[in-house]
Image (cartoon, rainbow, N blue to C red; front, side):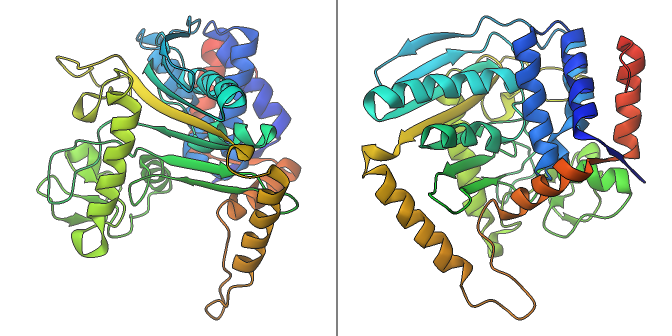
Length: 357
């Protein structure tokens, strides 16, 4: 069962929860915007369904609600940022601001982040560049839930990559994808609905195929994009590895199996190799490559031609970002549908902090 919650009401509730754990007004606004944007864009696995998880991390002292985010190393076009254990929902956008400031000055800006936490949807941070006529990029490493091709051990996170590209009259190009066949949040949605996972999403702890959405609880693993070697999982494994290196080896965060788990009930890995989770964000000024109007006109042309692609009967060729944009237009008007188990989690938070849902 689902309950439809008006956007304004869900936004106010979420902000009040972040204020309740000690976030400043501006940080509570920012963290709320990231979560609500995920729900609006139909990425329900990373919206307010994650709110109770952030609170539990705060309760176990793994999230600092008032971080002193600072640059610890930089060049004219690059920086390393220490997130001071802050919410990734807050740390990543602030890192993106630094990247855009550098791009303003020298054409491009690249920031790697350490000592942070789960940062919500990668697309939010990448899309910040659109407001300043910049190409935006964002990626993050995450809890080790993914087995490399031919492995049974969980070594990588779902490690998403997002890229946003401005246009002139067409909606912007926005690609936001996990480097696994499916993100862990999609499994959580299947668990709430009590339905099986498609083949290629997960494997059992011995490496054999499974459709059980609870497989990770029994020692199983998520699979890299492609699912198996015959369908290109080695490529998904390589992409996830690149994200891990850019996000964590660059910055000094924990990488691979040392990345801290999102769930608060699991202990932190022993003998850490860095600090917290890592992110990598970047911004590129369009006119660093060619005149902005000229580029955006060609992006419009690119999108228009791809929209006209001859499609399989009964199907439509989509541009990256189309489904999310359609979800957002609908949900702004109609409200955000929440699974009954998510509503129950929010009600638990409402009672805990005395905030009305």
